[in-house]
Length: 105
Length: 243
Image 1 (cartoon, rainbow over the protein chains, first blue to last red):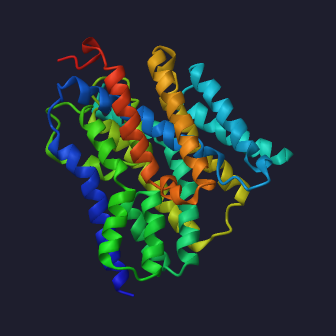
Image 2: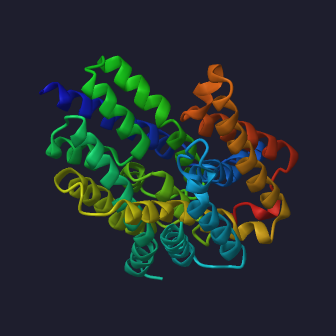
């Protein structure tokens, strides 16, 4: 079972290098307008793609209701965030909404 | 603001990450032990990798005794999105940021820490802020894994389900508020979510496209949509660096 530690080492090194190389190599502010714009938009696109529809969880086929708590939490979080809710508030409300809606279905 | 104050601010904003990680890594711990990985190994994996999807995929390779090359390539592909995130974050560091800050913070570039760092309300993100986030998030990830390994039934499923939504709520709290002042961002966020849903649901009917559901989806959509956005809506010069 010592092989596990070799796997662990490979995982940790590969994952770290992916994260470290851009930070270590790109030390200057990029002046090219295209790349600047691209990197500016990256967080918005990545996080939007990762949030929806993943927030709904695994939707069981034939049982759309199973995603209802998460769907309500999604809409509520979007509205509160748009109205200026802070990060801890939006995150907490999303959790509470899921918990409460789950009690009713 | 003093470095310690900035650190504390980061730590405070990292608490939702702590809670979300507790739930997600708890599930990882339960899964890893269920598949035959020893508890201390699962905890060590969490402490050295700090990533959910990559670790989950790795457990399957370890259990199946896959080759080391497969492991390296698998991790490279699944975690490639961090490369985009680190590149984006590199533009938010002061050019004078010391090398050791870059090497240390790199370890903590997760989806969530990247997200909250990006939302920092100044042109340059101070390293102390990132350390604060990591100081809150990292213990959550390791502790959750340990709890999942040793006591899988300590938290009821309903609480776990509710807690894991915290991370998505956090993402929403980061990407939505700036859209209020910038209609272009609203368009991009909405388009990204719709495209993501299309990529997620279409492969359920066309199985040959199922690779799109994997981690490729995040990378492909990010590169394509951010490229299109950069071409059609290049950021104005005055919005750029204050140098």
